[in-house]
Amino acid sequence: MGEPGTSEVMNLEDLEAASGFRTGRRHILSIVVENKPGVLARIAGLFARRGFNIESLAVGPTDDPAISRVTLTVDGGLHPIDQVTKQLHKLINVIKIRDLEPEDTVARELALFKVSVDDQARDQVMQFAEIFRGTVVDVSRRSMTIEITGTDEKIAAFEKMVRPLGLIELVRTGEIAVARGRSAT
Image 1: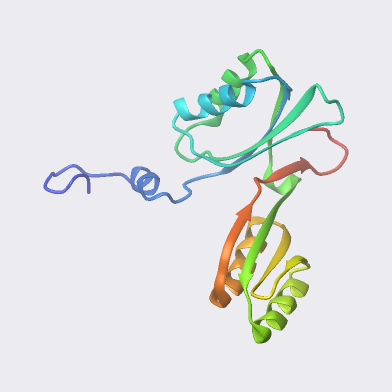
Image 2: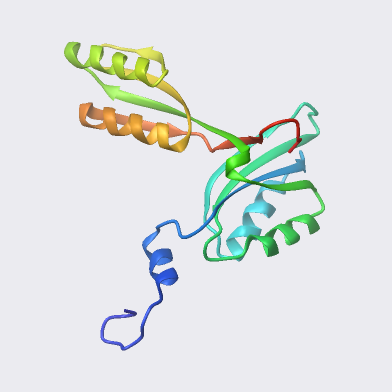
């Protein structure tokens, strides 16, 4: 249904978009750009104008300090991604764009979890960290900070385990990705 009191019928895509659920194919875009001021703002603005919500964004230098790689994750269910990539190619500082296929991509994210601990919970958190191949990066009397690297699902699973213990803070990077095999992104 649309607005209360109207006979307007909402289709499934509009309903999913309004509720914030993912609606379609997840796109991981690897964008190679010149390392210049304002490039990221123009890229993000292009997606915003087209109605895309950027789910994840990571930017970093490449082996050439004059070039950076932007890894952008968006939900392509409501809007076709092709039109945006064509417009990205027109931006003067964009060198190369690649829409990475999820099955042919190695993607990782880093998360830092600050967890409230007492003597009993400290051992449990350390066991969880070991199971998830995490690293304890900071310890104080009342908290521990654990670094977890992996897929979105792995990070969500670790969060599910430590949240009941007293999750104080969670910080995540954007997803970074590279194509499998010898092909360059």
